[in-house]
Length: 114
Length: 230
Image: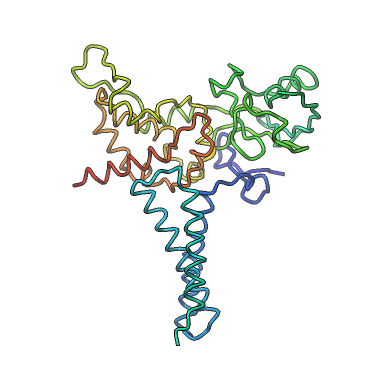
């Protein structure tokens, strides 16, 4: 059984086996921030299509709001780091983006708009 | 405690071999590997030199994280089964030993070598207390252990990406007034497969034993590249 797959033919080069527990052990916070933002982008495409088909479905509205907040706030985190905020803050910015997202979702979703 | 060690030799299959170890106070993973090699299994191959956390040659992936074996104590790992693997993204030579040649090759490809400025005849020092020195101070202590390259997720997907160590070195040179290769190196850094490819996941920063942040160096180089457009 291969524990990780070689990158290409030629010399044997190992890389993390993403299908193994060992490959995911000690995965860094920055990777999760990156992965979540990309996953939210892909999910947004699906949810926007559903929302255009029927804008009154509450579950789809909730999913759309959650995904927009997640994707947008993680994007703001990346921009802030690009603009020069210290890299050592990247975990705190990740936690801040998630926390702010949950807070904004709760505020918007519990607001009586009508 | 059991050490679960990656084994491979050219022509053979990858496998793990388990070795029982009795941890003593202050015993490191390197101590355990040496004990295994001298005792139960002389065929086990691994690399080390200084044994005191200076050279970086014993860098391994221990329990899923890049660490140097000589500075990793067994006791705090708090696991009955500790997995030991070679670094990722380097060609395997045998067991835990990898070939560091791509590391040097990528350094050269990224222009991460000092190019003396034309006309610079005498030895030119950058003073310890100068602003120029302070700007690169945090990035100059790289020992070339390769842990950042192993932890970088992008290295696996883009063969042309220089990797964190080479880009960190390039950063120190781009800010070095004695270096004459800024323009050529800058062109290489602005190419499709260099600075722009980093995803900023900071895996390299998390594992660097010298507490260097290649991510920070890459982001600084990116800002310089953008500002140079105006």
